[in-house]
Length: 96
Image (cartoon, rainbow, N blue to C red):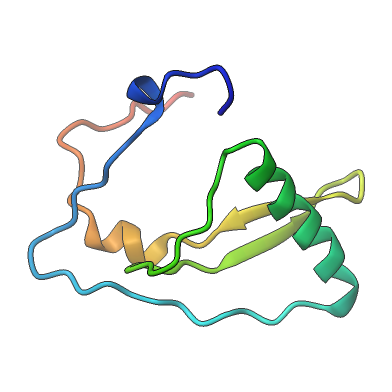
């Protein structure tokens, strides 16, 4: 992100020993959603939030979610990657 020191914002995931990288297949989208998805992805690339990788080991599919105002939110299905990462030693407290 512009103006943010990479030393603060960079994060590396530790993966369990023996975990095999998963490359999820590309999802099919309704044709009318494709320009909206491309616009959101291009916006994320332009601001430096995501970048293109030539030879990825892990590939997670995107999941477009329509917001109440009609715009698209691009989410990522990280379930396979989450399963390959060790669980944290600390837990979140439940808020009532």
